[in-house]
Image (cartoon, rainbow, N blue to C red; front, side):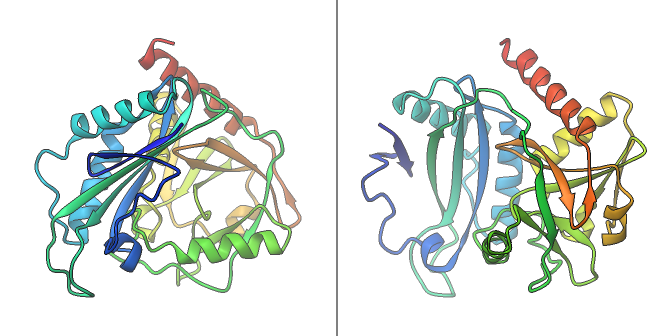
Length: 284
């Protein structure tokens, strides 16, 4: 049986667990993180909590000083244990502004919500079949002070994901109003040309992905050049490889963009480097 933690109230996941007046539900007034579980432990938690708290402050929440890595790690591990998740899994950690008020809240204090789910694989696995993608043209993502954070306003990603499936694609690439490619609907994007990595810069408006930063750091540690820059549609047509990164799946290779085909040599290497990193850190 799975459980959730609603502000230190432990509840069976199948039972109602979001209270009336929750501002995350009513107004999208919150931030969240998706965290990978390996061997029953949350990984890369320091960077997740850092981004979570920065995002909360950016939307003028006031998280208490004791909301730190050890506070959330203790609760995530306890929830994993109670839910019987000993190997691979995923965790979603939310911060919502406390109930009260309408568009002007009564308070900027914060509540938290944690949910956990098992996954079949303990470590990261590269997708067998590459993804087919295209560029989403109906909506753009604006550059703003919130662009780099995971807020609860995800409609552009939801609509793009639905539309991609309607078109027989695996995903759409999201762009900004200048035509620069930012990311997929749930992942950051890397472009590989002549052994060099290119990824949209944070200043362009993409999510500041925790896996994005892990891949950048792994690349630099292995003498692979990385450039954070503006990525345009024409760059995709001359690339050798495209791949996605996100905290839960790690690396996913893209097989096709329109008529262009790609290989997965570099993405396969990064899956191996990523798994070795966590084997070493977790003593697996």
